[in-house]
Image 1: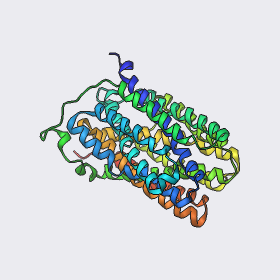
Image 2 (image 1 turned 180 degrees about the vertical axis):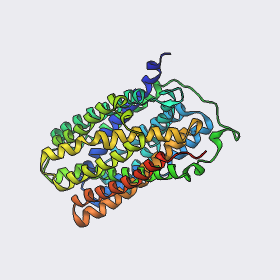
Image 3 (image 1 turned 90 degrees about the vertical axis):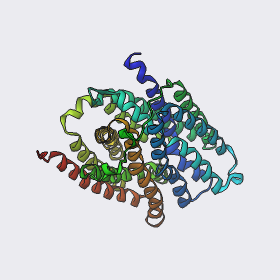
Length: 396
């Protein structure tokens, strides 16, 4: 089987999974608002996804490393998530806040580990001579961005015209596409880890290494800054009078640049070290949030802020995947990628969702994006430390 055919199922999973995310994450807050829920309730429910990332990715990653059954676990998770999504079709009066929370919890437990396990397997496939190949990785990952772009635009136009009532249908259809893509994957089983293999060894000793610890600190603050966008950006724009179609196009601007970066990153990444890109991404994130918080009604500036997504997300994501592949080699990959999800997305997601809810309730939605700019500043400080450690000469 050729390299392209081998990676095709991963491209399909990336496209379908991020097509699901492309409509679900931007429009979930608007759907909840449409059902009459307040900002705090919306903050709690949108934080459920991040809460599952505190435990589910690492648990799934540990089990996949030990069993070698990555594909079968992906298939089971996608199928169960699809079945759980049917609960969203129930009327809100019958479901209630707690019922809705349970449905979202069960869905996210089974989807939150899909990309870490897929990234772990794909990182091995796109490596050349033991080195992470950013060009090949970008050519696969860009399909996720394309999927996101299609649904964020289509859903925005659809919801503008028909309202938010069809949100559950969009959820089930996109999760059906995810399930179909994972069932397309070849059922390849890796040899299970034993107590004598590196995969059975604890990863916590790696986290105590200064370069790794500062890397995860930089990821934490950087993604926390992004979480405020994922949860509150659509609500923020809606409160300022932007239409859902315009909101979709502003999301799309960021994704178009993201696609362009993933397609061409093999040309640009060698210009700087990975750790230098980490610093640059954090600096760009701080600037992006200052523009978003300070001049949201100046549409050209808001578009410029969204264009920075190519650096603040796409570059940052590739750099993190590459650095984690370096620090967590071989059969430690799944748990390394799971830790990226837990520390990078799980904890910041919960703090960002609930903390942003408090901020927006007391000081308005713009305060959330000023907090995001401050978080990006902390990310840059940590990234500078990672960069300095990488430049330190190795003692003989």
